[in-house]
Image (cartoon, rainbow, N blue to C red):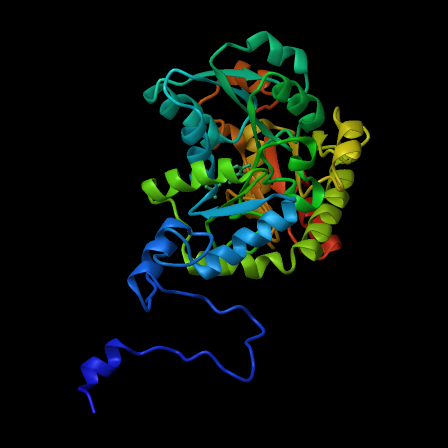
Length: 389
Ligand SMILES: *Cc1c(COP(=O)(O)O)cnc(C)c1O
């Protein structure tokens, strides 16, 4: 009998032989043991064939990567430590110093920051355009242009990008197309089908879906692009932790049910707010008054769980609303069970002055609402009592 120290160091859970776990186990291991030298070298060289070290590949993380590739209709997936990890890995891998990136505006705040601060540091030029007018793309195109970056549904205006038209123009120009599909999820939109090369999600939002994990995932049309970005993600250490990957996998099981409820609640709330005297400018792609309503109907299989509106009284009106809300919580993020509300003018868009806010289609009374999974009538009652003058 060996010493307890020796036995403890080699302790492992045996795989059950006659039965299998129904839920996927978490392979919470940093490294993998082999029987011979060649097998280690082979696994390190080809992460798609074996597992050697969890910064390179891990079975639980791989399960998530396969699931996202399947949902998005991609060839291969990649899971990383956050949505921003996915976005910066993709941009840094594709845009070398001296190249040019064309990006939609408005865009998620963190992506805006990468496209200004990081891009400048790495000598990458950036042009902005609307997500709907292909001629604009032709106007900003340069010989060194490499990437077109779009968001399916923009934050907090809920503008919908014309993916088929924009991606078509970018492909003609030889650009690689990246689409942040976080707000739509693969259930409402599959940008690879419109010709995108890479789809990115903050899995922190709808895919994880429970406000308990930070993670990012990507789906690729081709293995070559995957390999390029996987390599960079490994070098930069942007890997997904097995437990985080497991939480996202667990969330994915109920994504269709949750997404239907998020969209339903957002619709009911949008229609209620549209008739409310204290509220103007309700933006939700499902409303016939939304500028992109028709486009949304054509390219989305649902109108999403996020809406925004302007509350009477500007900041003061918003302050009263958020202090009185009971079901809905004041918190950044979207896509969880609880309805969340944010105030862009003092948070994501705080660097913009009044004119710039207006140019972005916002005001100091704009709130963004991520409709949660609450019983709809309770949610509407909550906003009704909170909006009483
Ligand atoms: C939250 C979010 C991100 C960033 O994701 P993290 O997981 O927070 O890093 C990127 N894009 C969109 C649209 C988001 O909502």
